[in-house]
Length: 128
Image (cartoon, rainbow, N blue to C red; front, top):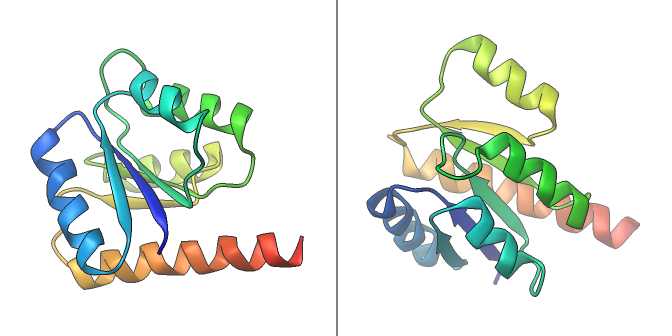
């Protein structure tokens, strides 16, 4: 079972993702702000992070930068309503592993993307 963080200020969105991830065999924890997540992340690692970009207190870019100060390898997927091609390019250039558009309409595709990144990270850790 993998441990996934869902960071989204919209609790309803985050809890819905938590349910779908649990049905797929993942343990998901929900956080509403970057600082709230970072306090937890310092004490216990995650296998994957789903990070909204438009967050209060600290946006997704700054939260991402702080995550990288703690862990350079954990996959961080941008989960955002910013869906224009240049948004995706900016996020990937910043270092996010992937861009997932909200609202999620195809949960099978979403879960496949999550699994793909967890497996990729596991292979890197095992090889490293």
